[in-house]
Every structure is written in C-alpha cells, then in structure tokens.
Amino acid sequence: MLDKVNIGEGQPAGQVQPSHQPVAPSKRAPESFEAVIKKEIEKLKGVKFSAHALERLTARNIRLSADDVKKVVEAMNRAQAKGAKDSLVLVRGAALVVSVKNRTVVTVLDREEMRGNVFTNIDSAIVMDGDEREA
Image (cartoon, rainbow, N blue to C red; front, side, top):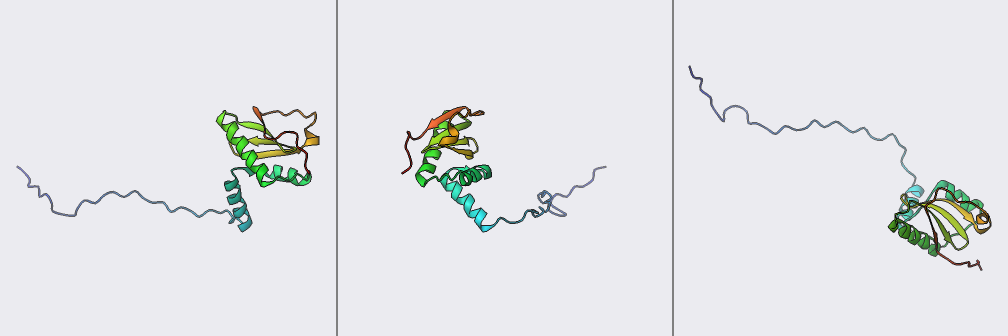
C-alpha cells in the first residue's frame, strides 16, 4: 500500500536561527574623560608611555617636546622596519627604552644616568640626535 504524500501542505519550513545568548554587560567602571583623551592623544602620536616611564619623566624632570616625540615615533618606525622588538632610543639628552611591538616607551633616563649604564633586553639602538645640549 502506498501512502499519499502532499508536498506544500502544512507549515512552511523556516531557516534555523542560531540561539543568541545575551551578552552580559562588562563589570568594569567606565574610563574617565581624562583617560580617554590621553589614549586618543597617544594614538595620534603613535607612541604610548607606560606608567613607569611617565613617573621617570616627572621624577627626572625630563621634558620631551613634540619634536622629540616625533623623533621617537620615527625611531620606532625604523626599528620596526628592521625587525627590532625592544630598542634604546637616544634623543636630545634622554635615553628611552621602547617596546617597538607595543609602540610603548618603557622607561626613560637622562644623560647623567646613561653614563656607565648597561642596557639589557634590547636588540637595537637608534641615535636620533647628536650631542646637543639644552639651551
């Protein structure tokens, strides 16, 4: 005995939709306006400064001009092009240890602290200025 099959009758077949799990909101506190602005400025500059580096800049009274920061970015770009990962950048009387991969200044030393210092865990050095003295 043959059963009769009616095609097209009944409910139309719909597409199977994946189940959507609601995403729980993040428990992090929102960033302050100042923190957001600081991050945006760092993006524009092409370099970030770690908290440690910022502390060293303040403690050692080292002031980097906008031109100095441009030179650090240029040094990082050159180092990256050569495959460097961690570099020593010398710019206008300051030595900056930078993570090229993370585009971050890790620490900063002034000219006096550079003398006799052994820099480890770097694979390159970039001299961006001669022996210029601050006026």
